[in-house]
Length: 79
Image (cartoon, rainbow, N blue to C red; front, side, top):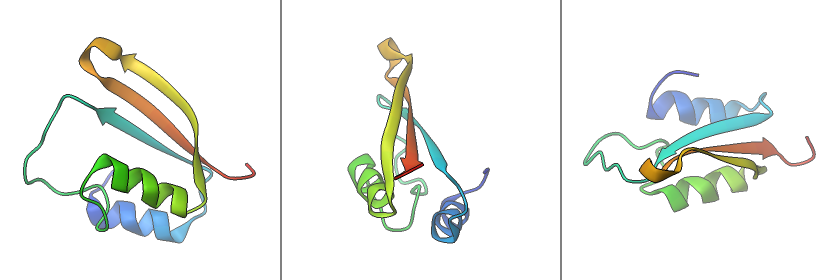
């Protein structure tokens, strides 16, 4: 799903999906940009929010470890 904070929050609330793919650029700061979800201000908050929505980390893949670029796949518990 392409969008911003509002769209991602809506998708998270709606459900109907089995996985949430989160790409993380660990060495990049975007300053005062828009957050991923309204309720979060950092990566740890985003992870807690996804886990609170019955999603667990199913897979973590380094896309470019030297640059800190990672894909984290959250999957619905029981899927």
